[in-house]
Amino acid sequence: MRFRVPEARNPGYLGKRFGDLKVRLKLIVLHNTFFLVLTSSVYFAVFPLLEQRVSGARSREISLIQQALLSESPLPRLPGLEIYSFEEGGAEALALSRDLHVWLDQNPGRIRGDATTDEFLYRKSPTSGVYRRIRLPNEYYRQALQLVRWALFLVLGVIYVLAVLLLELVIMPLYVYRPLRAMLQADYSVMARDSPNEIIPEDFLSDDEIGQIMRSRNSTVQMLRRREEELEKALTRLETAKRSMVDQDRLASLGQLSAGVAHELNTPVAVLQGSIEKLLETIDAPQARARLERMQRVAARLRSISEGLLDFARVRKQKNEPVKIRPLVDEAWSLLALDDNSNAAAFVNEVPANCIVTGNPDRLIQVFVNILRNALQAAPATNGQIRVSATPFPATAGRWWSIAVDDNGPGIPEHVLPEIFDAFITTRLDSRGTGLGLTVSEGIIQQHGGAISASNIKGGGARIEIRLPEAG
Image (cartoon, rainbow, N blue to C red; front, side):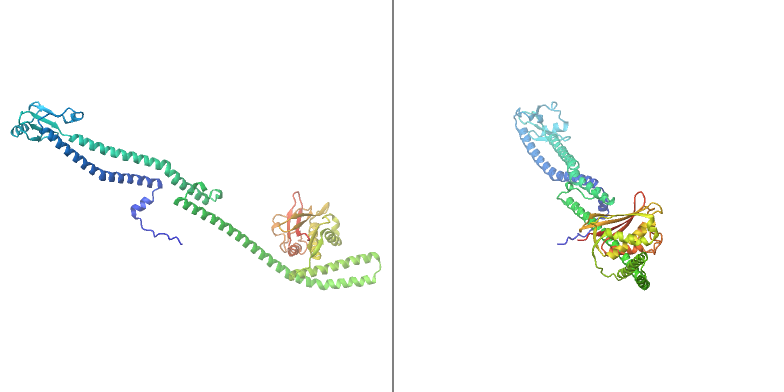
């Protein structure tokens, strides 16, 4: 069932002004309006009926007074009858006016009030000739009605004051002002991004309409925060996808370049390898043959690298196997032995014998040749040091090995670190080569499902770290 919002009506000028008031001022207006309506309703509903009853009682009492005045016997001396001020005597004793005196003499036995006031009734006894006077209870009834009127206003006023105190000191602060302040403070926290105080605490929530509004508001804020988190994660995934696309484009360009380089290398390498084989058939000197055999291994290595570049360009699935890293690092260093600069730095291989990863040995040795060459170029001419180490670490899926190649050179400039693996960066470690060594190495490691990173060592030097999954 869908909730339908009722159509809003124009409140008018007074309604708009009243709606703009604060909640407390609205309640004050309502308090006073209610008191005025209640007082007017009680007064006009109760007081006319009371006046009618009082008037009837007064009329009956006056009738009884007249009957007592017509009687020749005096009023009995009973408590409470003194208010009638009954007197008998002569005209002077009763202070009769001349007109009243004359009328009573002309109409003995009849009753008449004083024309100037309605306070007394007079009568002249026809038998004894004595004048009689009795006070009417008019003033008593007037005072009684006045007292009732003031008592009514007083009682209503006390009820109003007690009701206002109860509302303003107990009910409204606890059930209206307190929840509203909590809601406002929570909204201010939302605007200030104060996450711990965005949600209204449960002890402020009741089961009335205000509590329902506050629960709805809490649910809305929580839903918005979840949407923001989902949006942030989506943006992160999008940014990762964009970077991945850039990396794929870069690797694709690199693959095309690698294919071209490989094709250009194949012919001279084949000629070189054939020439070395013919020389080995004709030369018998042991030292020369050893040098030719080394050159043959280097030529075979060049062919393997060329084939690896073609594999990299074709993104062809490579054959992986368990590879021991320690001998692989030693072989990569020996391939650098043809370079005289390899003797300028002290090399230490601290990779443990149980460091075995899953990968292609030819591709991985190409990575270590590139990285060791960069370290050798970065190491100082005197007292240069290159150290290779490996440590295992747990990952979310299986165990991995972290293989680090450290040198004691000047380190990597901070502005170069973010783009250290980009192609053709001339300010990079391998700038004296083609500028592709680290880029190719990154592509090979990624094809192995691993990761490669560069950093500076505290105290001097650079570190290239490779992470590869351990062979199962």
